[in-house]
Amino acid sequence: MAYKVALIKPKGPLNLGKKAGDLTSSKILPGSDQLFSALLNAFSLFYGSGETKAFLEALVEKPVLKLSSLFPAQVIGEKIYYFVPKPLTLDLTSYFSDVKIAKKIEYLPVESLEKIAKGEGPGEGYVVQKAYLPVEKEYWYQSREIPRVALDRITYSSNIYYCTGITFAENVYLYFLYEIAPEWKTKFETALRVLADEGLGGERTYGFGQFSVEFREDFSWLLQGEYMFLLSNYYPNKDELVKITEVVQAYTLVESGGFVYSRSDRGVRKKSVRFFGPGSVFGFKPVGRLVDVTPKYFTEHPVYRYGYAFTLPWKGGI
Image 1 (cartoon, rainbow, N blue to C red):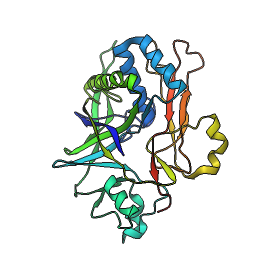
Image 2 (image 1 turned 180 degrees about the horizontal axis):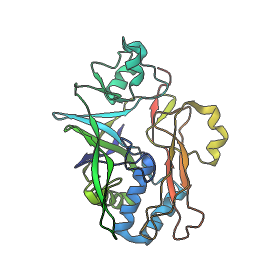
Image 3 (image 1 turned 45 degrees about the vertical axis):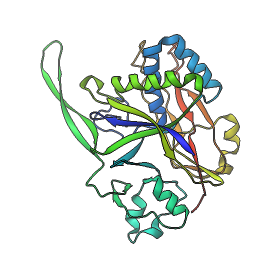
Image 4 (image 1 turned 90 degrees about the vertical axis):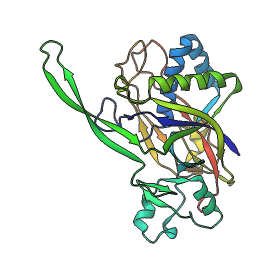
């Protein structure tokens, strides 16, 4: 099956703070909830509050938009290798002489998972920064501290501080998968183009987070199975909470918090949420929901975290 892909080429560093207001550390890649929040702000900026409200109301009712978290892609010649998180039920130690290296792998190209499913092993590759690359590289991303100077508005005295910028190797792109209802497709893709110019993450005033985007449909997933594994952050809906302990095979939890980013107020902290994270494996097809994280005294508009699941079929404990 082929999926819609948004292929992203960063134009400069990214700062995706691990904690709200913390510029000195950064996640490598944003989760689906963080990506959705940025997209929704771009949507509101371009289409206004009325259309944004209509989109949110549709999304609260059902998943008119499903999207994955951001993952790396490596371009070699005309070939694009899309990496996905390792399903947590997959044990790679039998394919490597060094068990420690095998346990470090978090991302594999789709082609490697297809070979493993056939019993052939992951194929030739190189473990670099927790990713199994088909072509050897020294790194696929770099993290560096960038100095900044803040001036006191009264005394004009200077104060040096640092922020972390994540940059990517020349042939490394980022991507996410998505499914969108036809009536929202054009507006969603327009909002993503707006986000490309506005920037993703922190320090956008300095040009951080800007990117170019290309829409493709060349992500092919041929595997089938009785299980589903996550490519997004997922928050179970009420019906799923009843049975979740019976159907989860392996999971990881991720926490998401931060501040409200709104034209009306940017200084209010949102409620924190714990999600099932990418790589988690379930014995059913999870759906999820939007999570209302509106702060107690924030009345301008509802604030949501995106918790719909984006999954792929998986054969379980291969």
